[in-house]
Image: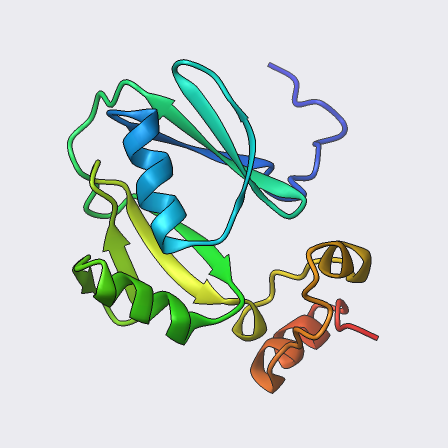
Length: 150
């Protein structure tokens, strides 16, 4: 078989879909944990905006709780996320801030300033977060790739 001449470049993730038992319960849980905008909602699906991205909640969980498979959710304030999880009596684990939601989805929480992931200035302005800045280690990682903020 001949390999195609060009391969598409993966540019990012548009959304992550999480399986939950109940859309109402999932919206209540995530609404207690985070500030978010509900993009849309149906009987078996709901979409939570994260600026220019979103999370899809899908009713009908069909798998056991995850032990290794996970995704990182980026927040503006890691200490606030840690405190919200504590107040909600959600157990955290791992070296960072990991937790499982009530449906077994394994989520790591990371702070925007500490990672390479970068939102465009106009997106941050639209989210009323234009004061968020990258920490020196994150800037160095971006510089090594030729992607440092101006």
